[in-house]
Image 1 (cartoon, rainbow, N blue to C red):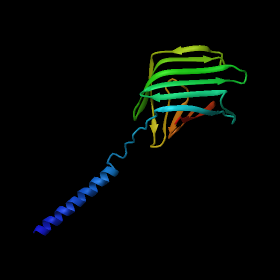
Image 2: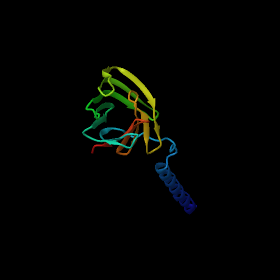
Image 3: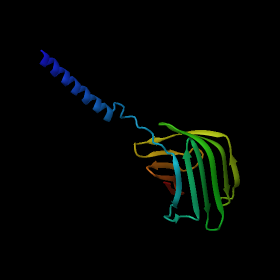
Image 4: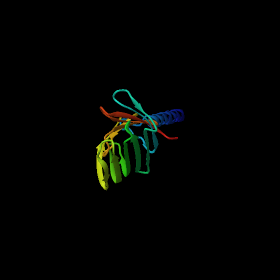
Length: 171
């Protein structure tokens, strides 16, 4: 009787250990993907235009920092005629497993290239959906034209028919 009880106890411990190990390494909620952090500072490396031309510093420069729900974005471009385009944004953001919300505290665009001059945006909030497949996080910044894809330490920002920018996280 003691042998049978001991055997049942040992088998129970083994079974529970196996189930615990299985749950820890393969939780039941594996269908839920945790949205990755996008925090960091990113530097613009280069831009590819639809005709295959690449634009690199000093004709195009940019830096973006996403930290503690603050976004600070700065971009400057000079065209072949020496006209400038610059865009700066200071905002708060919230990233969830479903969407990205941004509140612009202050934004300024100086568009000599497009002939639009200086424009400002303040105190506006918008939310956009995200997609995340476990490797790539993609969404369109609410106030900016590009669709961005975060994958590891790389980011691409694409405006169909206009350009794709290639960014890299600064280490």
